[in-house]
Image (tube, rainbow, N blue to C red; front, side, top):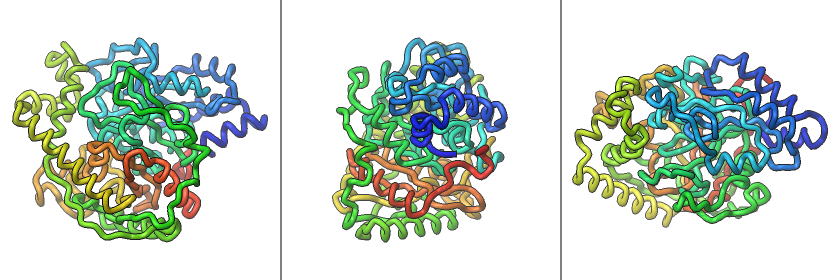
Length: 464
């Protein structure tokens, strides 16, 4: 099974029709036990496929939309039982642009509740499963999108990343996932401002699919005042960056995470190969990221509380335990001092990342500290044979799962997860971090690795 760009090429060559591709997608979804979809809109999808203009960038391509994004008329529950009766009254800006690019919107992919944890398991939809090993999670919060694309159900799906929710599932399922510079694709209408970390994009099977997605969707929109001006030529410009001589720091643990030894070895091997293949200049740096993520995490409860409105606390028993405890903790402890501490932490992370990129051009690290864990949870507090809870306490042990991805969200840097290899039959992602607005460098580095060490486009068990 190929990528979305190959599918468009097949349409244009007359080898396949959009309606035939859609029917194959529907059949694959029907046969799947991954629980990757929260909602299907098949009549509208068939109508769109029948009318598809294959001259458009995604003309006739079946696409999944993460259920945290709005599609008019679809359920807009934020994956929460407490909001199960809410319906989207308008399309999100990214949805509008995908329609304009010819995408056929098939349905809403499952997510973690409010995008709050790195595990796609909710009271509303149950557990979503990893196509590489169904007893494992595809990660979160974009787990349904990752499961659908890696599982061969459709070639492309939207995703969002407020603390790693594109990169973590991409790493767990062997996909390519770009978290762009903050503001690259507008998040409106009705944009949530705090905590100024969320970005949107996709999970894909190839670098070029992601580049084409950003061609279609990037650019300023007044309903998201933090969105960036449009940049042209993402796909056409692939391969145009000068990579030889760029300074690269290889920091598998990003100076703070505890890694599974097997994961660390795969990441080091992939990083060494990328340094050699792209002609990078390896640079040794010392990196110490500040502590304080728990205070910063409280700020995320503000927009979540806004979404619940008068349903809180009356429907608190309908929330997953993690969300319920997070809201209760914020209600009890979020005050001016804690907000000031969170702001201090944000500034320290920003300064640390800025200092880092004064010394290097890119950073090569792991996407996740370990391979995918159990689909039903809970979030693990162990890595390999190490009991992190005993070593560092529950909070820091749980925080290990976002330690590699969150810094790029807080500082707004672009970062990608690229398939790097496997441990125990499960994918491992290499994460590449770059300077603000330099996504093209990250895409081209990923393209070098994609060509030098091609990765499976779908999980071994996926239909072909």
